[in-house]
Length: 81
Image 1: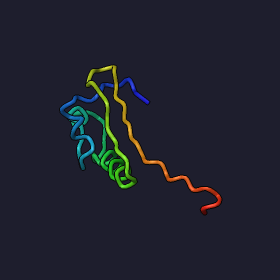
Image 2 (image 1 turned 90 degrees about the vertical axis):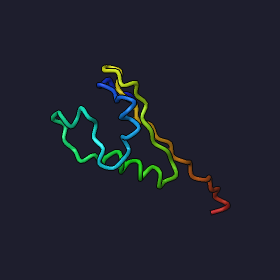
Image 3 (image 1 turned 60 degrees about the vertical axis):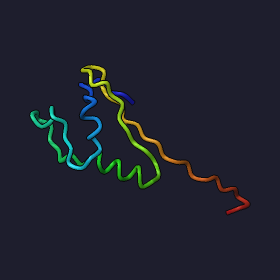
Image 4 (image 1 turned 180 degrees about the vertical axis):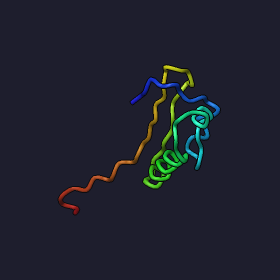
């Protein structure tokens, strides 16, 4: 899913998944937070063996896309289990 928000500048997108990181524009605005949400998401996804990333050109109106992958569980047939 992709939004149509302000986008994330490439220089800031590399920092997004670090602990206590907030975007420069959010520090000056009314958006509150501790900067832990994406850090926690990254920890969970990576603990499960996946990857998480953001795709954004940093252009207002083009928004951002947050993506993740998780490995699939091995298939167990009825005869095996």
